[in-house]
Image 1: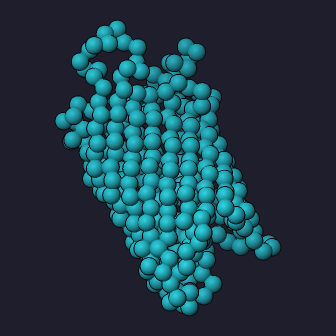
Image 2: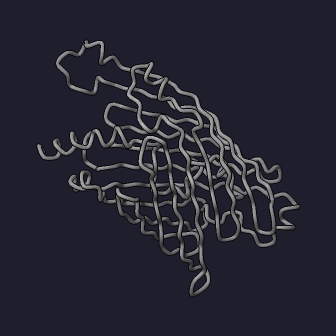
Length: 314
C-alpha cells in the first residue's frame, strides 16, 4: 500500500502538467465529443453513454462519464445534439456541457461534408473537503466552483469507406481567467485541435473488413496525443487493437447487431514508466440506443446512389 501511495504522489505532477480534454477509447462512436460536425452523421438518432475508469482500484483515480445525443437532419440537413462529460480526478470535478449542430452538404457522388458548431461551457468544482488536513478552516482550501463558457467549430468528410475530421472544440482558453480565480491552470484550459481519420477495407467474404482509424490531439502546453486502432469488423461489429502513444496498449470489442441497442467494452494497460507500476488498467463501457431513422433529402437519395450514411460511425 505504501508503494502505491508513493507512486500516486509521484504521478500527481504528471497528471497536472499533461491533463487535457477527457479522451475515451470508443472515440469513433463518440466523435461528437471532439467535433461538433460529427453530429447527426447517420440516418438514426442515437443516444450514447460511456463510462471510463482509469487505474481501477486506486482511490482518486480519473473516472470519466459521457452522455451524448445525436439527431440527424434528415431532409432539412441540419443535425443537432448535445453532450455532457463528467471528469472526476482526486478533488476536482469537471463537467462539460455543450449543444452541437451540423449542416450536411452533398459534395459529390457518395461524398458528404458536415460543417459543425457548438456552444456551452466547462463547470469546475474543487472540493477540498475530500482531503484530510490539519486545519479544515484554512481559507486557502476553500472549495471553488466556476463556469467557463466556450464555443467550437469543426468539419467532417465521409465517403463509403473513408472519413476525415478536423475540429477545434474549445476555441477560447481560460488559463488567465483561472489564474485570477486562484485555480491552477492545466493544458485542458487551452484551445485544442483534433484530427481524426479512418477507413474500412473489405476482405475475404462479404461483411468482413479491415478497420483502421486514429485520433490526434494537439494543445500548446502539453505533448501531442495520438491514438491508433487496427482490427477487423463483421458488419457493424468490431474487434480492435489500440495503441495510445507513450501511455498504453489495449483491446476493444464493439457489438452491433444492427438492432436498437449496441454495446462495447475496452481495456487498456498502461505502458508509461510511472503508471505501469500501478499494475492496474483502464476499463471502459459503452451503450448506445438507436431510434427510428430519418429520411434523407430526395436529391441526396437520387445522387448518392448506394452511399451508406452510417459508414464509419456506427
